[in-house]
Length: 175
Image 1 (cartoon, rainbow, N blue to C red):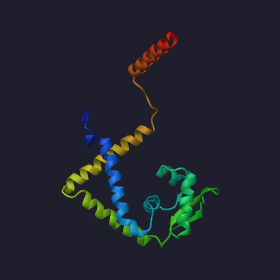
Image 2 (cartoon, rainbow, N blue to C red):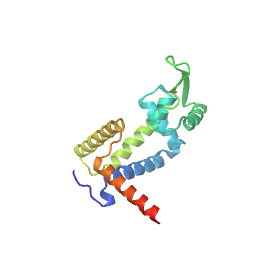
Image 3 (cartoon, rainbow, N blue to C red):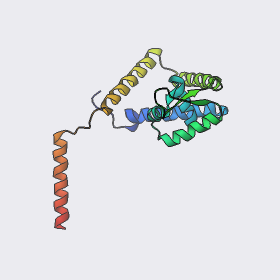
Image 4 (spheres, helix red, strand yellow):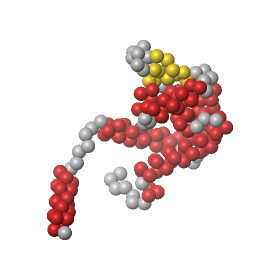
């Protein structure tokens, strides 16, 4: 795919963002009766996949600042859904673990998510869904790789930017 369609409804970035937004909104609607906020179920889902994370690792994974995550974990702990335990590897760190109390709710959330995906991808073949997931997996991997590299600019772009800045500076000094 060399050229991106200029129409917003065909733009990959817009579509990925909008589909994710709509999935979150519909998922919220379907699990509202569980009494979990979006932020809470987001943390719980990440812990379900990788229990026993440090708060710092969890904050990085969730793209959250540590302080708000700490307050969120405090509320989850008060509800009895997670517990903190000291890390054997780092005396300063706590590991966050799910409790048995939350597992039935997580299983209900997983069932709601599976039903949501079934509804969202209705009319698509299993092959199309698998291809879609594979494409997203590749894009995610590529973007993760890119984030580890320094940002580079084509020399032509830098030269053009310098030329425009010099011209703007010259015009400003003549005014």
